[in-house]
Image (cartoon, rainbow, N blue to C red):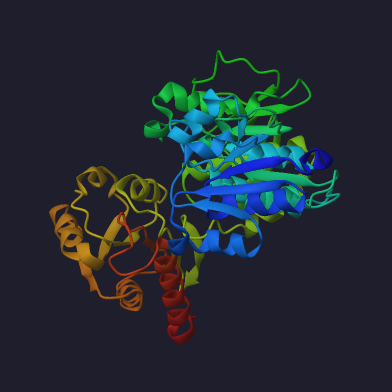
Length: 456
């Protein structure tokens, strides 16, 4: 494939992190690369950087006349829909259109483990990577990439045959699959999502099922037995099932009676080995365990990683303990649904830090899930709204914090041993912060400062 790229004309449609990576890797293999991006050059730092690297860039629109050139194929940024006029015209002309994961499949030599689903992809992918990286039977390297924020080509292009590539995969990446071939694939769950892109739930499901398109009987497909979307769908791969339902059977399952993670009839780990709360994280762990067991990782090695796993940054991330109070950073919870998931994860008393950008969205749908909440600290632009909501549900409001230092101080000085202090804002961050990451980092800094000054 590397020789086949030399002197081939390739069109890269769309920039951002993925497009930048694709353009650079194609150039490094001798391809004649043209990048086309919508943003004008003077407003487009990525395009300016590629120009400095002697890569041809056409910016400020998508001129269909560009397609008159004899490109061998187009690499489309996953976020650009197939309804885009440039993509439609390319399809009409018969120009092959692929995404980055196709190139990763062709350029990389390593085994591919692909993980997709509506919810939990990032946590499961990171946990799988951590387990395989620390596995006691590990030969070669484990490399992490994909929709998790690391371009697939950045890891695939450096891989060797003895390595493992663990990819988080979006429906956008999978939709155009042609030859992509994971040895182990997992579909965590399906919920209506990205319907504006895919047109319907059926279109979305079809994109997800592309993950198994090229699998053979030597490969594995991990599925959620609690859902039935793909019961009648065809695959050559061996199906492996997981469940969190105590009334169902599967290959990977959770024994509620004994509070243990099971692989078939074998105990792998205790629930107490895994610090992340919530049934959704039980499912995430079961998928990671299934992948590890399929690759012959020992239970002792799996347990060791589970015990030290703190979760993905800003996604119900356990950040530590002060005076027997547990702190969780869920700054990524920018809407009601995400906050509900967080609140459902706890049975211990919760002091809930909530609030942020005012988009005029009611919190009413959160009301049925307030049982663990003993008090609220209201944040940001919607502090008044959050306070009113808490009081309407007979929950004390500890105050309206101006910043995270004040929020942590209010929570700590009004808490007791065994309480959980949870940042799960249910609002976007842009009233006070540039991103949910910055908001979460401020919360972590406030936690660390309080622990340093006043903690045990």
